Picture 1 (cartoon, helix red, strand yellow):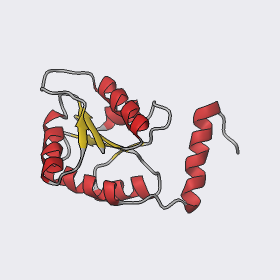
Picture 2: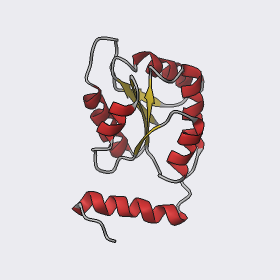
Picture 3: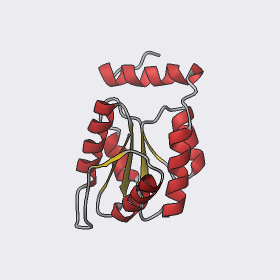
Amino acid sequence: MVIIGSDHRGFDLKNSLIDYFQKKDIMFKDIGVHNSEVSDYALIAFKVSRIVLDLCCFGVICCGSGIGVSIASNKVKGIRASLCTSVYHARMARAHNDANIICLGGRVTGSHEAIEIFKVFISTEFEKDRHQERIDRIKRFEENQSVDW
């Protein structure tokens, strides 16, 4: 299951990804927006993030640049959202950072490129090993806001 959402600037890119999901029979839930009227990227990022955590699945969030939704999503405890502008970013986001949400920019990423980024993101496994220790450190910081040097 993939949870997908966008603000007004990411609306067209979100719809391109949804078309791809439908063609490939990828289960998804579109949580909005459902038109191109001005909307708040932070609200959609928070909503996608909560559902991703509740369902233990992946998320995709689109805004104009991908930056705003990335910042907002990463404020939600347990989310590791990554702005991905290339397949390399998508691969590293999953392999090294165990990212659970990709953030894409409708003004900077074309639909074909976004689909390729998504495919790599969804098919890449977290490598664990030395990377798990870093993820665990991030989780501990989320809990108590201190660093265990």
